[in-house]
Each structure stands twice: as C-alpha cells, then as structure tokens.
Amino acid sequence: MANENRDPDSDTIKLSDIQDGDTLIRPLRKRSVVVAFGSIAAVTILLAVLELFQAEPERSTSTSFVPIVEVAQIRWADDGQPVVASGFVQPLAQIGLSAQVGGEVISVASNLVSGGLFKEGDELVRLDPRTYEAAKQRARGDLAAAEAEIEFFGLQVQKFEKLVAEESAAQTRLDEAISSRDRVAGKLVSLRAQVSSAELDLERTRIVAPFSGRVLAVDVDVGAVVEPGRELAKVFANEFLEVVVGLSDDDVRLIPGIWSLNQVEVQPKVRVQVEFAGQLYEWPGFLHRVEAALDDGSRTVNAAIRIPNPDNPGKPLAQELTEAKSPPLLVGMYANAIMEGRFTNPVAAIPKAALRDGESIWVLDGEDTLRVVPVQVLRILDEEVLVRADGITSTTRVVTTNLLSATDGMKVRVSHRLNP
Image 1 (cartoon, rainbow, N blue to C red):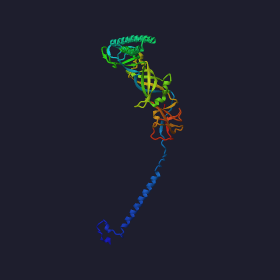
Image 2: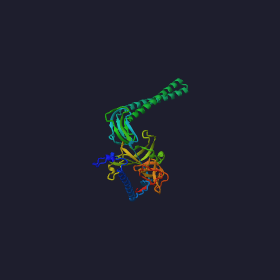
Image 3: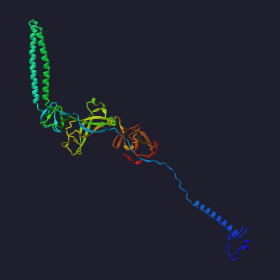
Image 4: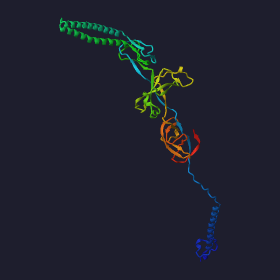
C-alpha cells in the first residue's frame, strides 16, 4: 500500500503517494463540486437582480427631416424698364477741310483753331488769288474774241446766202462762210468752259465752311504754300452728335417700335449721361435709327442715338451744381444712353436667389409643399430677375433658400422671416 511507503515524520502528501483508491482524494473532489455549483448560483442570482432593477430604455420614434426655407412674394414688373447701353460720342458728319487749288496761304480765320465754332459759309482760309484772277481775265479775253469772230462769220453767211439766191455769188463762197462760222462756234464752247473753270479756281482760293460746326484740328498757317488736296483742318457738324450703342436681344425686346423708327414722327426719347470731372451731366436725345447689320464682335444690334444742340451745357445731376459750370457734350466722351423700355405684358420680378439653374423657380402652395415651376428669363437686373411663367400670381411665394436636394412635392417649413 502507498501509505506504508510514506515518511511518517513528514506532513506533506506527494502526488505520487495518492492513488485512485486512496480515501484521501474523495473529500477534495466533493469540495470542488460544491464551490463550482455555488459560483454558478451566485452569478445567476446576480443577473436576476440586475435584470429586475434595470430601467426600461426609452422608445425613440423616428421622424423625417423637414427643411426650413425662406420665401419672398412675387412682384409684378408692369412699370417701365430702363434699357442702358454705352458708347462713345462721335460726330454726325466729319470731314477733312482741304485745298482744291494750290497757292500761298494769305489769311486764316481767327476761329480756325481746335474747338473753334464756325457757321456755314464762313471763310476759314484764303489763298493768294492773283494767279487765278489773271487766268480768268485771259479766258474771258479769248472768249470775247471768239464771240466777235462768230458774229462776223454769221454776217458772212447771211450775206452769201442772199447773193447765192440772186445768183450773184458762187455756192462755194457760202459754204466757206458756214464752215468758218461752225468752227468758231466749237471754239466758243471750249472758251466758255475755260472761263467757268478759271472762275471756279478763283472761288476755290477762298476755303469756306460747308456746314456749321466745330474745329477738331488745324494744320495750316499764313505763309504756307499748299498743293491741291492738302488737308488743312478737321471739322465736324455740331447740329447733332451721335452715340452708337450695342443692344442685346433682351434690350431690343423692351423698346417698342424699334424696327420702324423711320416711319414715325416722334422717335423714342433717350437720356444721355456723361461723367466729367467727377460729376454726372445729362443731355436729351432720341433714338434715330438701327444699323443694317449686327456687330461682328459682340453680335449685338447697333442703334444710333442723336443728341441735338450738343454745344448747350449739360444738365448737372448734382443739386449743388449749376448749368453755368457744365461742359458741352464733346466728341470722344464715354456716355450712357438710358432708354425707356416696356414689356408688352406684365412680367414677374423675383429675387436672383430664387432662380434655379436659369430655367425654373421653387414655389410653395397653401400647404407649404414645394413645387418646381419652369420660367422664361426675360432680363437679369442687379438684384432681380424678370421672368414669365404660367400659374403664378402676386400672392405666389417663391423659395429663396438654396436646398441641396429638392424635389417636386417635398414638404418644407417656412421661416418666420419673410423677405420683402
């Protein structure tokens, strides 16, 4: 037996001393089983207690997200719509004043200076006329001699006609007289033309203004010898000045009767404004004509606006200024032309923020449901867009908030702030 081999003086039991049939291991096995079952029971009781005292979780109810939007009411733009276009002031008629004959300049008018005013028929430059006066007298002398000669041969023809009829002279004498008379008659025509040419050359030594206007530039002085065709000055007519502006398709649509300007007595009125020396001035004008072709670069319609009496001072738009300090309208000024346009039918004006992709708007019905409405954009202003659409009224609410995702029929909530 194993017990017999154990050291009687030792209190330690070695594992090799224990055998299956040994009575010592049985109490150990019983204690292990009891401990295991006790642990399981304790855990089970603890879990039951925790479950008993655990608070019941709140039940959450899921709700769909409804976006908040700001809206504005549609305004009907049934009033006039200004059409603003820009261009440079230019003369209606501008020419180079040139000498048609050569000679020495003996006088220049005192008003032939840059900016000088002149009237039609004023003498601006005079050339030395003595050469042309002598040519005129010579041509007139030759003409007088030819006239006397043709008168003599005319009397000869009459004389020989009578003698031939009386058979007192030969027919050959009459024929010679007729031939001489006809030869001088041809010479007479040429001499009369020479006299007219000499008189015209003499007149051309006085260079006169072909119209009333203003001087742009001068290139002549007393003592200069000029050749025919030499340009002496640049001048322009000042009865009217013009501003040619480009009009877009939208602009043209707003101007009534623009294609029949030459068929009406009263052309559409235009206000021409120019900023000069930091101040704004205005002149009245009118739309005169539409040019025959589109502008090659901008593909716009060119319209000519005329301003009468441009030498009159402009109307100052600042209250503290008077017309006594206002400048005249000058060639080369940059001007804004303001024309009164009008739609044939009232259109809706909406905020720029309400336009979607340039072709639609979002409106709300009475139940705050979003609807997508297609629109036709007529004009884009600084803060508004003029559109035409079906089914909208003055009470229609248009959405100005930009939603990342919006669909027709979507529910929204309206902000308490209502845009004017």
